[in-house]
Image 1 (cartoon, helix red, strand yellow):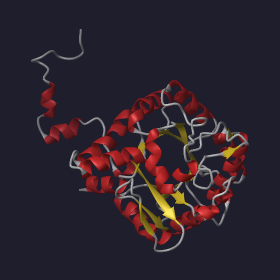
Image 2: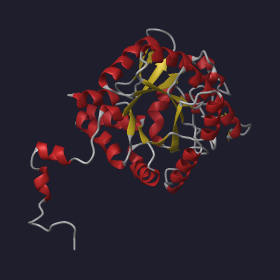
Image 3: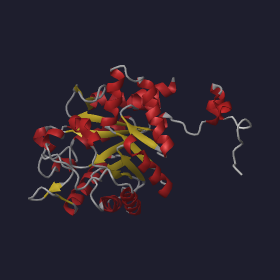
Image 4: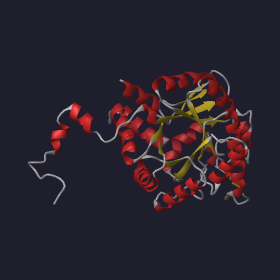
Length: 333
């Protein structure tokens, strides 16, 4: 026998009749606590630069970032994720500025944690904002990205961030074995409370273009790509293997990136591992929705909230999104 009453005994529309019933039986809900806000930070003071391909998103200097952090606290957004925009003169073949303890990221982390200790701060562990070639790792003579040599310097980068007081390091490079190496380095350094959110299933996606504009790596990367370390968009079984390895190596949280085109992967990861699972609504996803809304083709706030709810429904515990401030305001209204 079917567990469901046949029509007319069963009328599913009864539970859709009015607001209070829909609220009562809703399976998934979105709150400000589910959001992580990615921000782009510049060196200097009083600097504000619009990102043309990401309407409403700006690169800002630290003094202008502090009011944004204050808004996050007021709105209940638990974490801000930092992405640096480095002066081209500091970019090198080996990206050594990435582990400079007096570099932009450590300085911003220290200031944010001093001013807003209740706000979680997350930092990206990858070399692409710091390299003259725009890749996430160190190339050999042929241009192939070396794995173990890259992992060695990623550990230096993660330690510099941990020493500055960051709460969460987020390796986004997709080198093999980097989670275990970073975890060992953090433990050896006494940073036992520093969390790792691993970009475990990060795909070689075409949706990253506006982000690369924002951090200034697009021009450096040129016609090159990242397919030798980021995942093939056709694979989902492989994502489970990557996630399993990162968990075994000490990741506290895992991430799928991009977001909406890979909701099936989010669901598979959550069902398989039952660990804190996050998704990144990347720059291209944001830009598409913004452009359609600006043209009057979509209702901005409605599609923003619907897209974020989709991540929760797919199994994500939280979402990195450039909509975080706008979404938190609407959720409070």
